[in-house]
Length: 323
Image 1 (cartoon, rainbow, N blue to C red):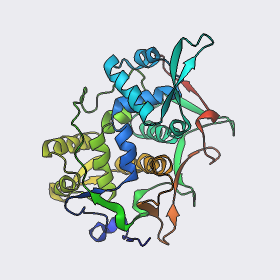
Image 2: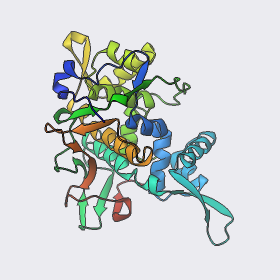
Image 3: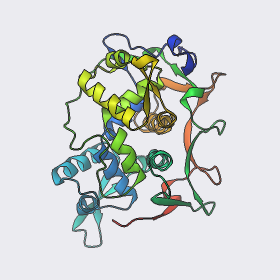
Image 4: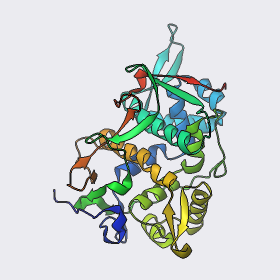
């Protein structure tokens, strides 16, 4: 398959992946993951499974989530193959929700969101400390390229897109009313993941950030590419500026990512890798991350102490809070 090889992100005027052809959209693996996890409640319900929540009441009590919302979210995660229902206990009177292998493989995404929140949103002591059983060390999550060990940074890579990267635009998803304000923490844990999601935890914000990593910085560019309502786009951009992830640039006509904003590329890169692995098996990726030589790069989350990957089953933790 031939590919278009754009220049670096710094030379955004030359990027072949920048402006979407009219009537089309990105056939983007990253968006596939966002389509499943693209709201705060879905992220938090999945996260509670890593804290060993199994029963409906476990999720309800720990998150203070409306029961109807929880029912729909659990059904959605089962349908997506992230949860599966199993019988609980010897009496087998109850069923519980358990992470599948596909669901367990989302662990790096959650740790990367936690790491972001610890760095940028939680001054002082992190609310949760992580311990890697393999190297017997406390650690912080790091997202690096598997091929060279360098930190994942959108400013130092290019995107290689395939000819079938553009597809006809699909119908817009049904609008969902957000039950909280931007920046409002939901759930009951004083948790770095929840603080991060209070800013970016909805489908439109993820997709807006994706446009910035493709080099689109102007309101009109993002509006054209996403087909988003102007009032929603204006609100999301205002929220990202207030949170310190964007800043006004070019005399106010454009926006620029701050260092914190650039740091959100790592979770999004992991979301793309997860979708390529689990939602598009056997399919040639429509977009790849490449270094200046054209070598494909793959993100992975590693332990800051030993540099090795940290599967969920090899991590223990202590919290500085009580529910």
